[in-house]
Image (cartoon, rainbow, N blue to C red):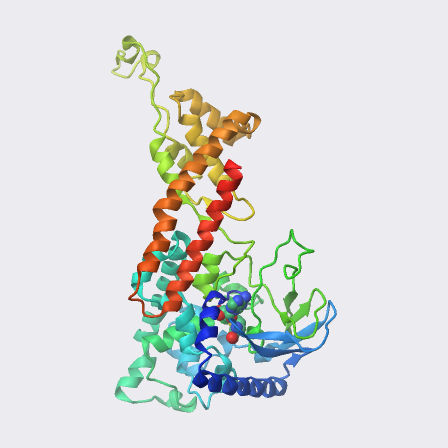
Length: 486
Ligand SMILES: C[S@@+](CC[C@H](N)C(=O)[O-])C[C@H]1O[C@@H](n2cnc3c(N)ncnc32)[C@H](O)[C@@H]1O
């Protein structure tokens, strides 16, 4: 699967759905799923020992309806039922520029689809509602909440927004919407049936986010001509599988084992179990080794424990680099006097000594500036963080060119005097601990306090999801401090 998301939001939703009205909505949704199964059977989609169920906090999911052995093919989706760029309504495909992304094209197909007479009515009926999407996906949230996103989440969100705006601009400039204003249709449009021509930005955004959360990576000889991010396909029924992350180092840990494998052949897409299941157990697939920031922005949920989680600590580390300015060692006055040789060039023997590079310059030179992370696998910082700390340490203590030499020997030849000396390693640990403590106080705790103070938020679930994220970040920092100081 290319993408997915929703757990924290789900908790909120669980509470919301306790009202009677929501219960009615739930039962009608189950009927929609039953209809989908009838439709699926008719299309040749085979479910073997699994069925869709409502899962508290996760919308729909797929559950084992009988004990399953490992290596059982539980879902087969014939290629002819996939929704690809080739199945897009011809009027829509014709009206949009050729360079629109496949994501944008599939979203247009969903948005302009003249439901309820649509070919995919049963599938549309089981997709999350617009409220579900607006509850969970940060792209739809109040902009005042953006300052409460982590750095990485904000970067992802801004990229996603730019991608969406580009697609939406193409849709707006196409004849699809201009048809709406004068109510006229050309002959080809009539041929292909009526399109829903009254869509708004929010309609398109809803469709675009459905595509974002439900598409699978689809590489075929035909899609290979597209950029990787354009090799995407929608798969009715297969898109009901929720995501779990897989910890390769914890094979024995229940719930952490790889659950299913997915495969495409020219004729079908299949999902196969990789371990046994008991009846009633939810069957997941893995959308990829994603951090919680990624899951939040792309799929709208957070895991409590995510072995692939990481948090960017650039804001903790970069200030250390600013403090580590190299000093020139004291020189006798005559050596710094500039003399010119006969041709007016500097006399090489008496050249002024160049100041050693700063830690920042050195890291930039080696492409190690920024992108520093803490993660559960490396609670004391990733390799890049360790390199940055060594740069700061090497250039500290007025070590001048010697410090620079020491750092270069570390990066160029892998000579690590810090690791060999307990004293040096302790210095690095203390430096990182101090930086993390400062960041925890100045940023992490401030974010939590700011979110708690925030009352004017459209939907409380958005604020709660951000609170959950910053608390996770706080726990990651605490774990690092335990390791560093313990
Ligand atoms: C492809 S759909 C999976 C089916 C979906 N639950 C539904 O109701 O249609 C992907 C979406 O499911 C939800 N989801 C997937 N895995 C989840 C998980 N482990 N916890 C919470 N929500 C999850 C997220 O909302 C995500 O955007």
